[in-house]
Image (cartoon, rainbow, N blue to C red; front, side, top):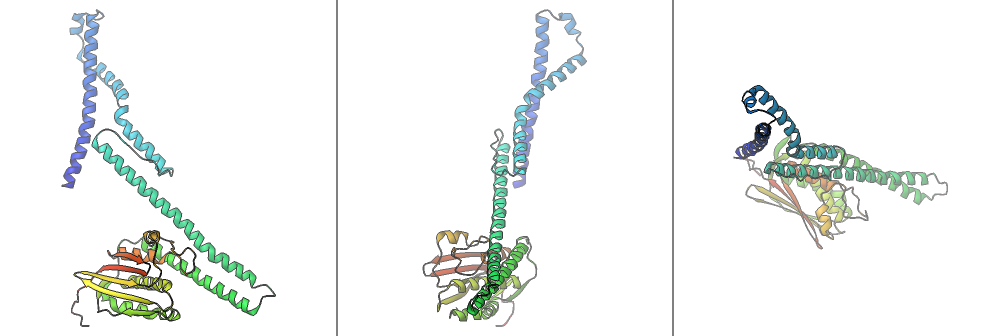
Length: 353
């Protein structure tokens, strides 16, 4: 049906240009014929001579007149094409604010809409690229400046042992932050260019989350956090390594914003063919603005930077979930935040739990 509609649109456009050409040729013939009769009427050409007027000469005059009229009247039909060319040149020069408003047949208006949408999308991509470069530069520069400053301070002769130890800890911390940022940027760049998900297999998702909780045991102990996770065994068909990164990032985020002595709850529930995984913390929640941008690259809701992070963890999570044709949403209040991941559940497949 869509192919038929597309064919009809192109056919109408063809008819439009054919009609324009036909009208030009018809007008040319009428002008030549009327002009010749006018010459006969005023006596510049005698009637007898007009009857002997060669047909070939009439055709030549008609062609010449038609050419002149085509040059004059073709400006109107070709104006939209010139507008498109000018707009395309502006896009190529980096002006993504250009927009078209073509008049005429419906096809021209459709072309205007599609061109404007394309320009808007290219402008958005360019803005994201610029923001990424700026944020990337800022995030890299901050720890480097810090490391350099404290490294210079270590050369002071009157530095107390306690201060020297503190400065060394800061340098180590900033180095780890820089290393994590580098790894996250490289990983995000890798998966952003990925459109086909490879190495998918069926595995026990519940067991994977338990292993990730065990990996974060030290961080949980430092803040005396309690993990509540009482789930049945659920299976998914996915890239196991990628999904492991999802749970590491989400649970690490929950630990980061949880108060000392708080609780982190993990709930899993299957409804039909969909599997819901909810990870809740007891932090201070998010503002509406933070919720809107939480999955943007380099976005950090904690503007004070009192918590460690580089604003890439949740962007990585979002991309991985998208690659698995799943979804992730966040619900937040002053009592904490909940991230909910929706995935396609795998059947039991004869595995005995």
